[in-house]
Image 1 (tube, one colour):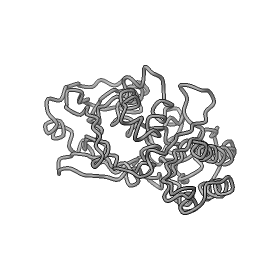
Image 2 (cartoon, rainbow, N blue to C red; image 1 turned 135 degrees about the vertical axis):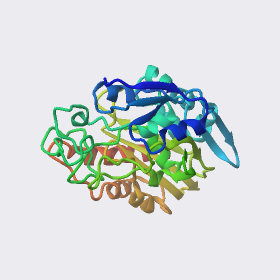
Image 3 (cartoon, helix red, strand yellow; image 1 turned 30 degrees about the vertical axis):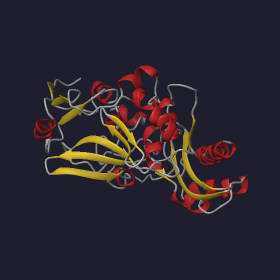
Image 4 (tube, rainbow, N blue to C red; image 1 turned 90 degrees about the vertical axis):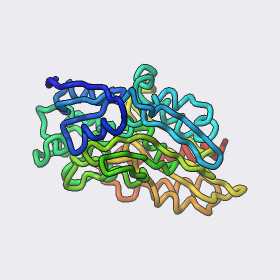
Length: 327
């Protein structure tokens, strides 16, 4: 690990001013991803700012304002909060499917939003990786790419986004609140993540030194009827090969509105707009589910070892919809 200096933030504004415009200064909350990357010399900050003293741990729900989540809320606290279980079950289920209890007790919401890919070539500096070293090449293209993305990739990068929580947040139309040297921003999560394109090192729209402070989930007519389904190689402490977050607003047997997001298959948490369009206005039945799931995977671009993900993701989405129908 490269030597670095460490300081604790005393207030939000001074922390932001210290980090403003600096790519070599990192905020640290739980550190469950950042510290691993530092050990592997993938992240090499010259300074860490511990933001745990900041007042960013609130979980507040109201019928008119929705759910307000501080960036330092631990994943386990959010997953088990009664208002989350009652009003946003897909989020609770997604969080509980991730990592291990020990990691969930440390990991924060803000850190989860910023966790980086688990692509083995990204972690291993013996291999070329455009995300780690721009223009060096992508070893995954011709390497073992079973876990890699089939949606949103480019000729520069096919690394999969790792988060379960973020897939649920995409289905819930989450808004990410930030604060930087130039003031505050409200960023819809659908606009927060960037596909790799020709610049895979740029993963989101944050400016250097900009701090995530909160996440806002709006009042939603579909959030209570929601479900997260994750398929992986083992039943715990494993990243998704495919996952689906679905939320439905019903009008009798007809779907009034739908939100569908996929995980484990995209370079970012993947919003399946085509599937939502087919579901909206349709009757809940297996045929509709199959058509919607096929639409969600249109444009998939598999590689040598991960073509199975197309069928796996399709079945995962159908299963998630059938669960909601049975419920």
